[in-house]
Image 1 (cartoon, rainbow, N blue to C red):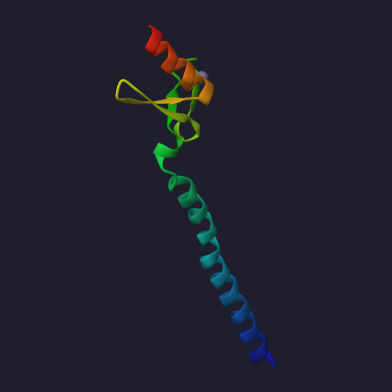
Image 2: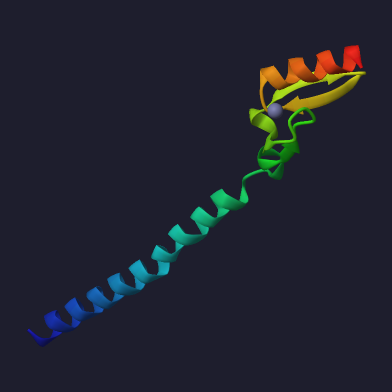
Length: 87
Ligand SMILES: [Zn+2]
């Protein structure tokens, strides 16, 4: 009877140690996700037309004088290119 209780306690302690050993794995995994983000994906660029800052990936790509430019909207891209032509 005493032995059975001892085995029960040992089994419980082994279970606790096992759980404690594996549970911290959840933390670094989440940090890895944040760290895994590429800095390029969150790069801010300035709209040369209106001066607004926006994420490069969300901008409108335009070409002016052989240079790749990014605009906050299609409207700004047209305005900028039109301005380049006239002035
Ligand atoms: Zn703009």
